Length: 262
Image (tube, rainbow, N blue to C red; front, side, top):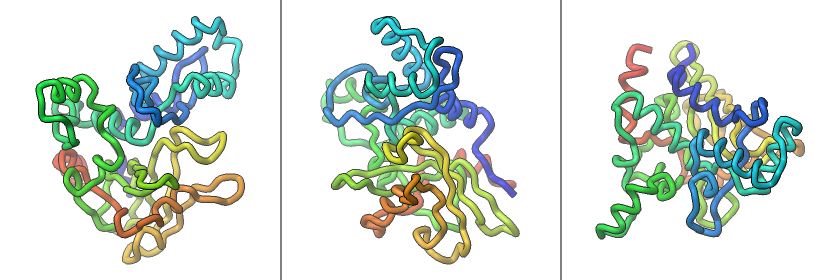
């Protein structure tokens, strides 16, 4: 049995994998706003697929290039050079917000607690730029989410881990869970990552579960680069006691409703 995110949500996810640029389906690259500058969301690693496409086409005109005459990799490199892409939390936030809004008609960020200045200006700033304020740590901390055992995992759950950068968090979104006789056999996840060379940016990967009674780090993580390095699992092993499977409290009622009869 395969449990998966709803079809409309997966269609939205695929927009990041198939940016429509030059009549080509271009995979969105990774970008994170380490300079903490203020700019449009698409230039901060926080844009929706529409915002990223619009910004890319503006730069196409500004630089006098023609995406129709460029191949996939050339267009991707053009985006990278312009700092147009998506970071891990921006990607996950837009996906779960799409699902939440589909079910409730409201945006999910009003349900996520992040530190903001408790002034009128601070509240207005968060209202205007919510995605920019929501990082991987806030999505997966125990104020906004709860820990979930491996045998309870559902699509929509998050996996909290670290990056090689000190005190930096990363987040994976569970897209599919494959079960056999009620036991978890495979977890298919998505994320946006700076690693894996030409396969950086938004990508899909899997974890094969050989024994669901053992912790996640003891399972078979299948995502590796050309040298056999699994950056994602390595990040999970950094301060692993602080990592794990998380269920966003705001999204949990929707997950329960979606998968209650499966």
